[in-house]
Length: 480
Image 1 (cartoon, rainbow, N blue to C red):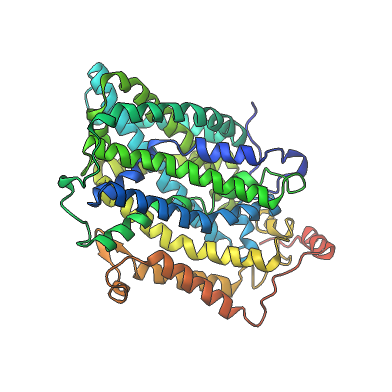
Image 2 (cartoon, rainbow, N blue to C red):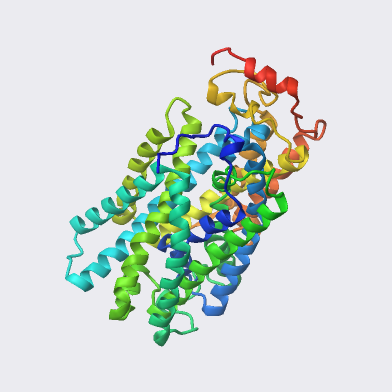
């Protein structure tokens, strides 16, 4: 299969041959991996019992999916990725906000997937063959996973889609086997090693789990969904069908692995660490399936994340090809894996990462969705590509390529979120107003959306594309 040549350019109609079933396959198959499973471990590690953990994961995931799923419809209409599509609201240069947010989200999740998958692989290989758990062993396994991930990401969407179809079936079977493997030692009681509620009380800890383990999953896709729906044709598939497929894919693709992670955390007594107890508690007959899950699942998930990172960097640096951008971000992601392994605890690193990125990403998603509703899903795909062609003009040019109200609104929302976040090593000053409960994502989305509606109250109508605007954009040739 040839290497994909498209970056963030507009996908031609004749190449938009994917459908809703492909969307479900890629969202389900790519998420059945340890990089997503481990998020189900967070609530038990926070000191919650089984039922409290399950409700926090389910409620958070459903709430996040309700916010995130409609973003899939944007790229269905624009035929390009979401960060580029957000140029309709932020301006053709201002859409760099989305590119940077997407790049950071994908970078963190790629590193996390390779990190956790590699740790489990080393643990399994130690039990099977006596492989020493040395720095050299970890380094070799991380490098092997990274190389396989890069190969899939460079070949692009079609290869990743085929891989996801296989993983959707194979990983489901491996997880079902895992339920039987860990069931004998399962308990519904809170793990005593966790030391009680992380935040001192039930509801603050439950809400933290709902955000860190539940809501963060769908929010991770706020810039990724368009990478897949841009290959679906709105002429052949309705928005309702695509939205339903997105909701199904996100819900199943996140709840299945995360709840498996919650289940195995209690069965393995994994309060302070996940990878080590998971391997130690596995019966001998499940070690090979666990090795397959750690390797194949990690490559599938990290491959999609790395693919998205390549697109985001390609959007930031138009002169770089998607392939070159993918190789570049792969080096950075691999470096983050080693930093995570040697310099951070899994719980602190994961909690800090997801809360910070959720606070920063939510107002961007809210503003983009408000713009989608205002323009009724009608965009000028050609005008969205002005920055990529290094030209000027078009209906999304605004002020030198930036829509100031949208950018200011996102800045206010993101700043509010950062001031209201509660991390293991930092507590924002606004926490005193919320009783110590982390409401950063709610406040950031509310402030960002309200500010955008207020600043654009006098001109609520979005730019409307026309044949004239498309022609004007194509003729623009002034170099930036």
